[in-house]
Image: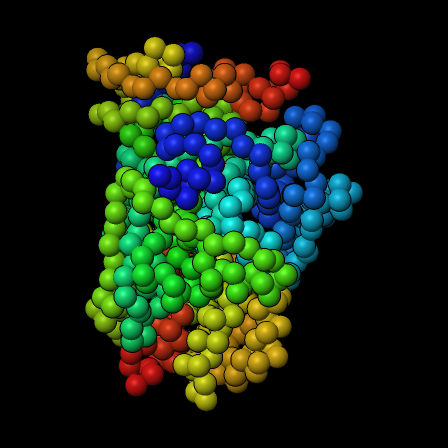
Length: 156
Length: 405
C-alpha cells in the first residue's frame, strides 16, 4: 500500500482540540469539521489540506479521544500523517477510519513530494528516504479495506 | 512475574491480544459517532447489551436543538436495545462507572480518553475511539497491544495543603505529555495505602495526559471497603516483583501545591511562583476533581467567607450532589457565593456553562489546559481544589497554605 502527497510541516504535541475544537463537534455534518480543521492554530489552513501529507513532531493527536479529529483530516483530503510518535487513541482512530498514519522521525520541508510505502516500510520526502517499521498485518488489512467498518463488513 | 496490566490482559508486554471486554461505555459526545459507525457496519445486534453503557454527561442538558436532536436519537437507541442508560444530570461517565460498577481485574473500555480513571479500582481501563467502540458493541471484544509499564513509586504521605491533584500534576510534569505513550502507569509504594478512592481516581485520571494507555492501582483494603458499600466483596491484588520499563520515585512529603501553565499540562510550577495572578473564573468539577471529597474540601476552606470571582462548581454525579446536600456542604457553597452546575462535565470542553471570553483566565480543577479549549482566547490554569478555593476567596491565584492558616 503506497500513499502520496505534498509535505505540510507541523510541530510536536498537536492535540485533538487543535485539530477540531470541541465547540464544533455536535453535528452530523462532516463538512463542519473540514471547515474548522486546525482553526485555532491557523484559520487559513483548512482549505489548503487537500492532497497534503502532514509531517509533524512527536505525540501527534494527543488529548481527547474524539474521532472527529481523524475524520476531519481524512475528509479534508489529507493523504496521511507522518510523525515520530502518535497518541495511541488517535493512532487507532486514524487506522479505523482509513487514514494512514506512519511512525517516522524525518526532516520536513513544506511543499516537497512525499511517498510512503506502508508494506515495504519506506518513506521518501523529496530526495530523502527513511526506513520505517512496516505496519502490522492487522493494521494493513484494516487500512487496505478503507477502515474498520469496511473491514468488518468484508469479513461477514 | 507480571505487571498488573500483563496479569489482566494475560500476556507479556509487547504482545497483541484479542480480549473480551467486561464493560464498554460511551457518552453523549462519542456515542453519536459510535452509533453511526455501528449502523454502517450493519451489525444488527449488540453482542452483550448488559455490558454496554450509554451515559450522558458532556453537554447536559442539551445546549441547543441540534445537540438535543443527536441526544434524542442516541437515547432512543439505548432504550430500544436495552443498554444501561443514564440521562442528563446523573453524572460523568467515569464517575458513574466508579460508583460500584467497575471492579478489579476487569477490562473496561470507554469512548473517552479519561477512561483510565477506572484504573483506580485495579481494572485495565482505557479509552478508544467511536469506530473501535462500534466494533466492540458488535463483537463484545477488541484487540490490545499489552503495554510496557512505568512504575510510579509513591512513598511517605502528603503534607500541608498538598492534595492528590498536586501529586497528579507533579507526576505529569516529571513524565511529560508523551513520556508514557503506548505504556501503562502503575502506582505502587507505601504512599498508596493512605490515598482514598476519590484521590486515586484523580491520579489515574491524569495518566492519559502523559500519553499512557492506563493508570492502575492494585486493589487493597481501601478498595475493598469502598466497593463493599456497593455490595461487592472483592479480593485484593498483590503487587508482584515485576520488571518495569522505567520507575519514577516520588516522595509525597515533597509535593507542594502546583499549577499547570497553559497550554501544556506538563508545564508545572509551584503556586507560590504565580501568586497574585488575577482570575476571571474558578471552576471546580470534572472527572478529575468533582467528587465528594473535593466539594467537602472546597467548602471547608471557603466556609463562612465569600468568593471574590465567579466560581462554578459541577458535582461529578447526582450521588455526589445528594451527599453534598445532605451533609450541608451544598448550602455552604451557596452561602459563599458559588454557582452550582448540574452534574456533568460542565465547561471543561468549552461547549457551554462557563465558556471563557477573549483574554479571560480560568483556574480549573480539570485535566486539560490546551489553547482555546474552554473558549477562544481564554486561558486555563490547572490546580487542586484547595488552591481553587483559596484563589476564589481573593480573586487571584493564592496558595492554600495561606488561606487555611
